[in-house]
Structures are given as structure tokens and as C-alpha cells.
Amino acid sequence: MTNSISWYEIPTSNIDRAVTFYETIMSISLIPMDMSNLKMRVFPVDDMMSGVTGVLVYSEDGFHKPSSTDGPLIYLNANSTMPTILEKVESAGGKIIVPRTQISPEHGYMAIIIDSEGNRIAFHSID
Image: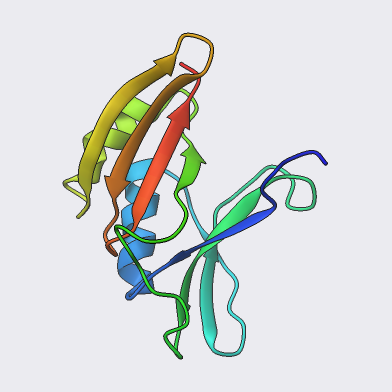
């Protein structure tokens, strides 16, 4: 097993607003991938077949529900861009609930936000 995570889905109640939020704070372009009753936008990776990635997802049946308190906590890779990402969170419609905090010298830093949809999402960076 190369990675312990193979895929993740971040629920949205408004996919366009969520796309704007993540593209703004992470300076990326999400890739559309819609299926029947799901609207999805994929986080870019260098190699879709061997890299770990996931999507913002909106389901018309309400199966995916944003939450700031329930469910697993996903850590997105912030590499060396965490300070820049965190500077953009509030102006993009989110809220920082745990600022950039050192985990340990060998494990780097983490931060937790509430995104534009009300999801609790974390970021990790080695530096």
C-alpha cells in the first residue's frame, strides 16, 4: 500500500461557492467530473492513477452533507504554502479555527478551518 488514503469527498451545499473558495485559497484549478446525480470537482494531482486526490461533491439527493463537527477530519497538503492559504481563508468565506500550529519539528505544521460550506478541513505542511 502506497498511501493510506486513496480518495476523499468534501461535501458541498453550493458547489460553485465551494469551488471559488478552494481555488482562491489554494491557487489551483479544480477539474469538473460530473456523474448522474453528483456534481464533482477534482483536486489536481500530478498523476491521477497513482496520486491521492479527492473531490468537492454536491449530491442532489442530500447524501453528502457538510459538517463542522461530525465525520472524519481530512488533511489537505499545503506544502510550503500554508501561510498563504490561511491568509486567504476568511476573505474567501471561511474561518480559521486552529491557526498554523507546529505538531513537532519532524512532523511539521497543521491548521484547521471551516470552509465556505461549513466543513471542518485541516491542512498539513512539513515546513
